[in-house]
Image (cartoon, rainbow, N blue to C red; front, side, top):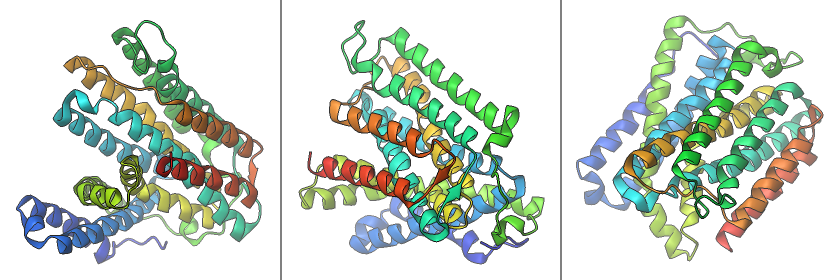
Length: 364
């Protein structure tokens, strides 16, 4: 992507159109136009995704790595957390498993789908790609700890029957999740920032282009938040017709959650894919693993607070099938990203695990 000191008109128009479509739906246009308006919402959603990727690149190019990837990961996850919390408050105790399902889907999508496709794309174009192993190892260690503590351990505690923690256990795990994620961000941005920077220079034009002005960067930051907010709300608006289509095909309802999670993560996914193709695998992995960490590290404490304040029992533990897939994903990621070099082989392994996850979800 070419970075300039002026923003293309379409990147400004996309979030405006998306929010106008949301306003139209709230005004009842969706009921009047039916399927036509659903198609317009879908078009607005993908326009918002593409604009979000553009503005994320502008911000990242201005502030540099690894801050740029952290901005996109935290922005997307914060909006996702707000959406989950609002749905929980509106749905009551019947939605106490929503956070678990969303977080697990996000982790599987990122750790296998996003990482696998990026490794395949980069390996196909550049052969062998290199990255800084120190940063990736830190991210995987943190991700493994938080994932197991939040989604596996609740099935085996005895104070309360699984898949739930007691109130004191939930508070403790929420604090631990925040401590682990906060420590990771500190390491990534301050203490060991060099672990998350590319080891070799890249010839990518966007990297070496002059950075945008501060004014353009601030406009892109505001437009990025507008794009991400519209993407999440449009995904929520498209959920009912999507659910109806999935049920009409005879597929399990769990597939709807995966599709919505994929749409919400699409801005990060496209940015990571573009970075891998440009031989910036370190940036790609920073985006992917940082998104997975933010998804767990911010979501679990937020929903824990909501559950405790409302006196709900929060279901966190995943079933045995999901546990096997999660542990397999963590083990394979640790091995495939364990020597600082990747080829299409590692990418294919992750993509196959992701395909198995999707197939087992549809055909349980």
